[in-house]
Every structure is written in C-alpha cells, then in structure tokens.
Length: 104
Image (cartoon, rainbow, N blue to C red; front, side):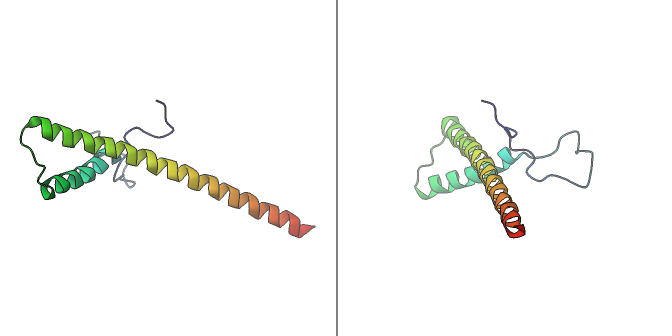
C-alpha cells in the first residue's frame, strides 16, 4: 500500500538544530513511540484484568497488538492533517472570494 507519509511516521523527536543524526540514525520513529505507549496500555489492561499469561506467545501478542495500534494511530494522524489542510484551503478560498466581492 502506497501512502503520502513515511510508514514509520517519521522521527518522534526530530532534532531540528543538527544536520547530523546520532550514529547515522535520526532516533526513535513515531511508530516506535506510539507502539510503546500502546503497549503500556495493553499491559495495564492485562494486569488490571488479571489476563497476564506467561510465555513468549502472550508477550509477542501484546507487542504485535501495540504495533498494530501504532500503525492505525499514524494513519489517523496523517488523515486528520490532510483533512485540516483541506479545510484551511477552503477557508483561504472563502477569504479570497470575500475580498473579490468587497472590491465590486
């Protein structure tokens, strides 16, 4: 699937003061940051619901669910930004139209 945004959401905490990323890597991606936050909630829910199971399978499931949620969060973020940009464009067009009408 092709998107107009980076699949990992880009950097979570971009360093805008330096041209050189640390060790050739720009740092944590937004995908990783969102997944970490989602995993915190997944674990909190599991602990509060006493759903915690031991073993690699359950840990793997929690981690995968966190990344699935993070991917959806990135899609929603960029979708909202695109919608907001379309709204701003419409407002600019309305302002330009109002200016033209006022000149008449």
